[in-house]
Amino acid sequence: FDPHAILYVVLPPLLFESASSMSWHVLRKVLPSSAILAVPGVAVNIALTGIYVFFSCTVPGSKLTWSAAFLLASILSATDPVAVVAALHALGAPKKLSTLIEGESLLNDGSPVVF
Image 1 (cartoon, rainbow, N blue to C red):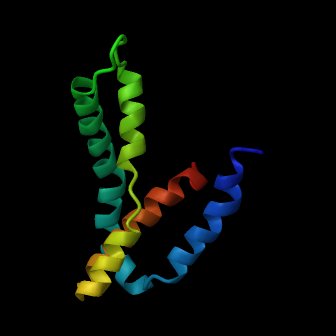
Image 2 (image 1 turned 30 degrees about the vertical axis):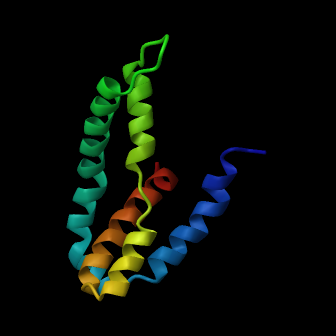
């Protein structure tokens, strides 16, 4: 089993479905905000979570390294907004807000395909 199969086989159809169901006109308006949430927002989240993990998580008998703390932080910082968007739809939130969250998720999920 090739571990990259998920990246090349499963992720593109999911990205396509997410992108095709979004309103392009609303996404174009919220794209700068989505980009700010997707790039610097995630970087700040990884940094703060990594620092918190390094100082708060102790493993008996060994010391947690910075690289392990930031690895865990990068795994925890990538969130999937499916439940959030479903809750926004159920609560009747504005379409702009749900498109902002979906756009940020699309940029986060699409970055491994591009890079």
